[in-house]
Structures are given as structure tokens and as C-alpha cells.
Image (cartoon, rainbow, N blue to C red; front, top):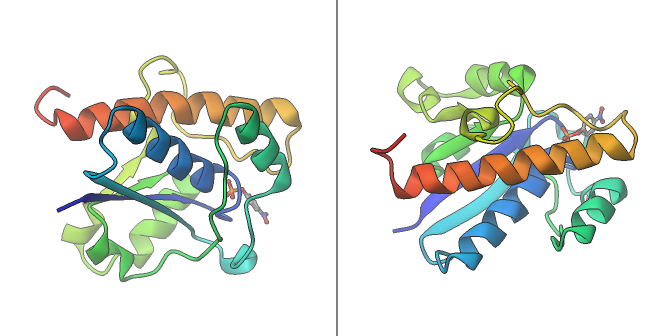
Length: 160
Ligand code: 4NP
């Protein structure tokens, strides 16, 4: 059975769809596509149905990631379906906790920066929406680092 990972941010148009595609790409490079499924969602439903923000699509495309996710809100049922729910910042962490149907299922929530190895100075993935180009590049740097760490953690749970 596949391990299912859900990445969560606020709007589901910048950080989490990029995380989803980066994670999927890293897993594919290690021939692990059959072991993992990645998806993403937002704690705010205002962008539901939209493709990722064009600024994020452009920045990600420069690094070889094609973002085609269609934004959707985080739902209660996600806590049953997914094995890990990985959030980008404190706001998402609190919103996900409020939605979790039980304390046990809330235990699936992790912070993305827990898995950073080369960028340990960050305790959240900053919202790039009101930032310039550097904001999007910083997010991609953090997500590439964290996705690699997350993939290692999932493959070797005893080592972390
Ligand atoms: P995301 O970025 O949470 O990384 O998708 C944002 C997208 C939209 C808004 C804020 C952050 N917004 O205010 O609409």
C-alpha cells in the first residue's frame, strides 16, 4: 500500500502545490513512485479550483517542476485518507489542528521545516504571496531541502 502525504498551506496555490510536485519528482528519481502518493490542500478555500500562482509556476518550471495541481480546501476526510499531513507554517498548523476529527488523527500533522537538513534556521516556510521573486526562490530552496529529508525519514523511520 502506498504511503500518502498531504502538503498543506493557506491558499494551495504557492507553497503546497510546489511541495507536492517536488516530493513526487524526488521519489520518481529514486524509483520510489510506486511507494508514495502526494497531494496538497489549503486551509483557506478562496482559491479552490485554480492552478498554482503563475509566479510559482514560473519559478518552479526553471527548476524542472511542472505544477498542474488544482487548488482545493483541506477536509476532515483527509485526516483518515493520508498518513502524514505536512504544514508550512504556524497558521496552517493551528487550522489543521482545529479541523482534525480526533487527537489521534491530529498526530499525523507535521511541520515541513522538521525535515530541513541544510536550512535548519527556518521554523516555517514563509508565505511568498506578497513577496518578490526572491520569496519564491527561498520557498523552493526550503521545499527541496525538506522534501529530501521527508523522503529519507519515510524510508528510514528509525534513523531520524
Ligand atoms: P500559499 O500562498 O498559502 O503558499 O498558497 C498564498 C496564496 C494566497 C493567499 C495567501 C497566501 N491569499 O491571501 O489569497
